[in-house]
Image (cartoon, rainbow, N blue to C red; front, side, top):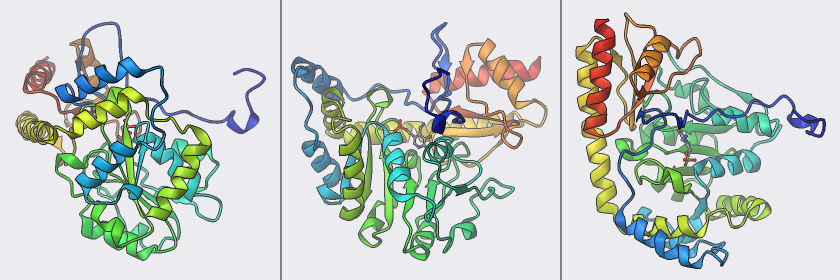
Length: 352
Ligand code: PMP
């Protein structure tokens, strides 16, 4: 730390992204990326857009906002486009939380929520997940706090129903409820239609998972026009060109191939069922996931040791070294070949 770093940030513990190792070619199942490349339409559009990189991108993202709005059945001014959904979550903490609107999110969820809360010095509470890792929804009813829920949750993969979420939204009319739907396309139920019924609901999503564009950094938020305006105020106060020209073009290309997105999601869900079954046959306990990853533990192998041994065999999964999570590993669902490589490695480790 330099002597110039503002004292307000000295205590900050930044978010730790999953490993992106460069040392060798791993079977990479640690950061919930798609195993499939983006649509050729996305690749072609980005290549063409490269010829105009001397120009700033459209700061209003008009075309992409209109396409996305049409696809999700909302108005274009009920959409904000961002540099990965992390950015809209950042704006939501900035916009809707303060000392009188503290944040609330589960003790086990996406690790960035805590980082944003600390960054802006927002008070927050973290009700524990139940013993079975489900969200204790009663804790969020009429709670008088700004609610952040990942649905499906990470790293568990467990999903709440729209009916359960609606109760939370309806019971907190004077607070914003943010539903992070990064993984919703793999079997969850989307809350987006509820934005027309509740002016306090923000639903966030991303092109990083189901739309195979993690490297392009494209995310979005859906909410009432007034909430979107608040977020736009912060976007224009930080980086109006947050979505670059290549990403915007690729996003449009990807949206023009929704069939490919749907097909890839179906394949991931099939591979998830296949992997869960094989892991269970080997004695694993696997949480019922609605996301593109599995959260699994084995009674006879320590989670950290399994992670390490898999890494030595060239298979990368994500291990969280906290008391409740350390028996588990989070395994991204990849192609059938990648899942077979994982299963072969796991089998060999169990037989050691
Ligand atoms: N929400 C959740 C629950 C996530 O796991 C992630 C991925 N790390 C994100 C949001 C952010 O994804 P991105 O910024 O790539 O859209």
